Image 1: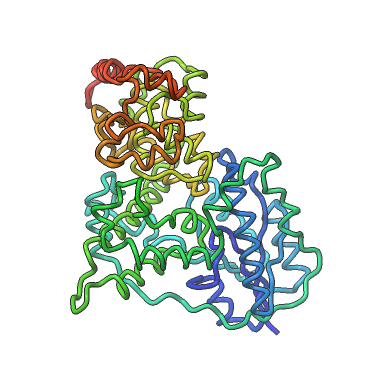
Image 2: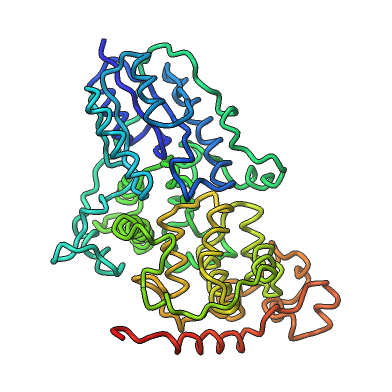
Length: 475
């Protein structure tokens, strides 16, 4: 009987899984495997929050496979050595996997694929984590796009939505000794800081589908006008599920076509189309990282190599991390992040702007903290997002766009619901004061909340002055 391995990585699902579907079609027996080799992702090994999610997602995948007569065989790396050992033990003739696009991973996978082909193994990889391969959307001059709007205009015009591949009824396999348990990977934190994660999340494929169903039923219609409101349940909360491949972008695009069209109309609703464009931003981030592999470390706009960042200030960075800045919207976002592993996207922009512009600390400090604390930490999205807000990306907010967290709070959290939840010492303040309690000194004294660590107006002017010193384009 012919046997194939299916190497799961960040595609931890059974539905719409091209590698699994191809193996089931071509072979009588399929062995699902996972190889734990974080060192091969250096220098960006998964952070603590990502490891928490990975643990529970692997548990969920193993249970889903067991219900179909199989299970997940877990080994530790190095990946090539582990794969060769499993191939030899099972006499499998083929190995299938779905592609990833981070620089270290693509280099590793290229080496592994060639080595296995040289061994006589049928090694194949598939597109599963993106709508478009990073090289599929190019300018008319066959160059990568550097601006989102024309990138998404081209991608959206070329998008061919297809039905998701079905979940296999069964996964016939062979017995294979020596599998590790998920607990053996030591992914969970040893300190009890993750209690809030269990209330906020259900990792795994079923958790992803449930979250998407809730979004389609309750929030997608008004998504375009409500998505910036952190005080409301108006976003999909799918980002960690997408990162770990518990749902595919094609599943999302298909369901938006099937379920988010106004009755009797051919086009998606405005909210659904806006949500699809946010999936487009994810695609654009992958596109940028593939073509500019130094993006996690280097400014995409080389002019910013000369920018006068402030001196590293560990105390200021610590107060930012701990949500003790004295600016309610900033502190609410940072505390939400620590408690749940997530932060509303509008608030992410605010806290990033505050760190890079009001405090003038390098964006890499923020990117590193998000990498360790976000359950949806994704190298492409994280790097692109921080460079966008810092103003040094290829398609960035202009540097002189400095978010004012007070006016942003008044606009997007007008009654202070979000701040009251995450900064409970301010819960009894009226809405008229909750975003700037320092304007009434007696309020601060009564609450114990700290005064602002910087003057927002003065620090804004300092950032703009530093920006004026940058060399002009072409200098």
